[in-house]
Amino acid sequence: MVTRRWLLGCFAWWLGACSAPSEPGALVPPTADEDPALPQIRLEVAGHARAVHLETFGDSGNPLLLVLHGSLGDYRALRPFRVLADRYFVVMWDQRGNGLSERIEQDEYTWDSVVEEIDAVRERFAPGERATLLGHSFGGMYAALYTSRHPDRVEQLALLEPGGLNGRIFSETFDSIINVDLFDPGMNEMFWQNEVLAPSSHEAMDYRALMILLNGKQTNYFCDREHPPHYPVWRPGAYVEYLRGLRMGAANALGTPHFEFDFARGLDTFPRKVLIVAGTCSALGPEYQRRHHVPLFADAEVVTVPHAGHRLFVERFDEVLAAVQGYLDAPGVR
Amino acid sequence: VLLGAALLTSRSSAQSIAPVVGRDPPVARAWAGSSWDPTLTVDAGGSYEVGRVRPRLRLVADAAFRAPVVLLPGFDAWQLAFGATGLWSAPCGFGVAAGLHPDVRLAHDATGTKVAFGASLGARPGYYGRSFSAALDLVWSTAVATHVAHADAVEDTFRDRYPNGQPGAGPEDGFYAFSSHRFRVGAAGGVAVGRSVAVHGAFGFSFTPQVDGIVANPPISPMPFYAGAGGAYRW
Image (cartoon, rainbow over all chains, first blue to last red; front, side):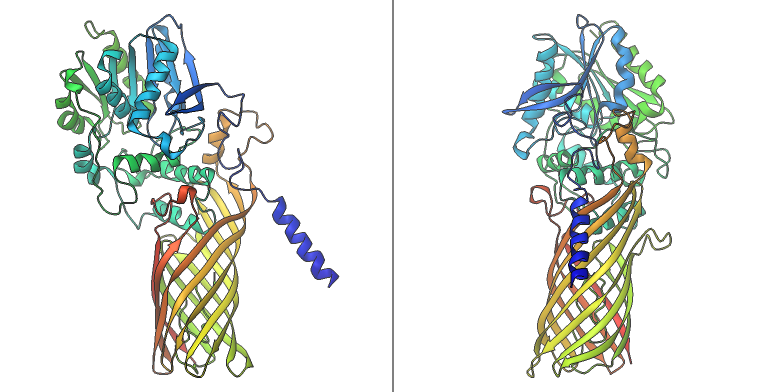
């Protein structure tokens, strides 16, 4: 009997000594609210003040350049664009709920709050001034959304492979971009992981989302889907992905979802030239951009980056930088 | 994993209690099947009747192996369960099968290697006829303790901000307690085809507790259903 009690006691002690998947810093890095040493500001958006992981580069007297990252990522991969600090005051941040920024609640994530967030960052660093926006993927879509709402607050607009800028484009092209293959090993690994580590906490969800990022087969984004280029992140914000799907009108949908949103309304009134950069290997490549997005603007140019996919600035940074610098320096753009 | 009492039953999913197919089946059984739970899996197992506590209460020891079909060649994901199932049935045929099955689960993927020590507890109240059975399928499956050994892809997410590997900066290799809970509510049944052969199936709703009550947002979270079928040889 003593032995049995002793064994049960040992088992209970051992279980108690186990970590919880939700412990900060166990599965994914701590966020700015959990680690005060991280570079951050507090930003009030949608009625909530949140710790936002943010860095600035360059002279604050230069024109403001805001860099917006895409989905399942943060600004870590975009940091090489800090070289633009030679002529701009570059601000990069992890959008609320992403990367090392504080996690958010469901009611904090709307298209209005996305616009409010970009506007709050602009006002923080260049009150009353126009900003240049550089956005990748969903970051490019949000840059377009902000421009459609506040064209008078945008100086220049550079988009790196933005996804469909309205629900119609996104719905029509969804099947050509996303692969739902139930026999894909990566997909099966994600489903099987429910047996050992279920997405019962934000941290476990983020950890799971990293698997999506590492699997190149779920999207037609890459030159080599078996070996997608390494995309450095701190933390893919899985809950934001869920909320984004809800807002787009596609969450919990099986099969081809129907999306309802419009980030493009009024973009044709933006008075200056817009740059779109795209890689030839990506389903969101030059043809996609010319066919679906160029007509939305009064003046837009597509620059092609050969032998690059959706992570074009990771694969061919020099070419992408040259395209962006060429656009920013062009007479009449500013 | 709760393995169905294959002695009593032909139902063999590694996560369920099997309904009896026939009130007086042979004492030994081997089975194979396939199911969606939580992805497309195959399973195989065997069982043996170890005794009758009372005339209407039978005990079966069983063991089963389950793995995702796609991941089977690499042996990167599997579940091995051992346990016991008891069946009590009234003279009219109504009864309940219940079982407890400790198990070991492996998941090896791009984020690391996870080895979980888990268990499943299940009950199948229903009708157990001479040549068929139909019952509710109620299962709670949990990973009691999961050892996670992180891959470099996970360590890379920390390395940039914590280059010196400060204590507590993770990611932490080690055991995580109760890292997965899954609940199943559905229906299960089977039909004996002669004395030596039986077929079985089960389907229903599968729920994994998730952030904000999300039911399904694949592939981040599992699809909220399960279904499976298989066959057994009995002797």
